Amino acid sequence: LGFLYNSVRAFYLWRYLAVYHTDHCSWFAKVDADTLVNTWALKERLQRYFDSGQPHYLGSPKMTNLGSGRKLRFAVNTAVLSSSLLRTAGHWLRICIDDLVRRKLGRGAEDIDLAYCLDQHGGVEVKAVGGRRELMSRGMAKATNSPGQPLGKGGAC
Image 1 (tube, one colour):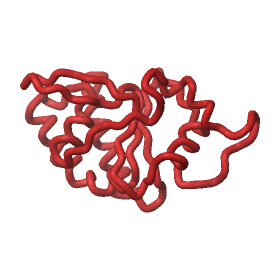
Image 2 (cartoon, helix red, strand yellow):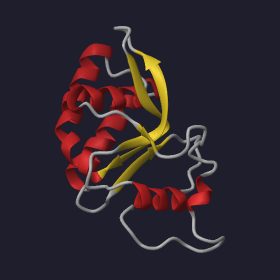
Image 3 (cartoon, one colour):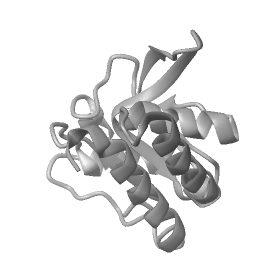
Image 4 (cartoon, helix red, strand yellow):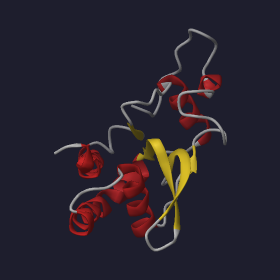
């Protein structure tokens, strides 16, 4: 399908996870291929500061202007959804896939399209998972246990 249709592929991934795996994991993340994530630190941060039973859409927020002129915040490079939000969004994702194909022939920017879908159907806006200038691949190591120690078992898969 090519790079232009990544939005459709990503939406089908989120939809599949929503339908078949929300009872198995507390958190779900989709990361761009060129992005490094310290998964241990991310897991620790999610467990400490967020409740997966609440509808959370997390990442490193960035702003875009929609064609309507409205501003929309989206998670750039990495999107993290709680099981609660993904379970609820399962139905929305099917609608958003159809809308994406009708409006843009399936083409788009998957991170912006996900934010648009969550905003349109649930009023859900991305929240920062880390500090303002913190990238998903830097600084999050501060959330880990002492060096070389694995984090405890818990909710993230």
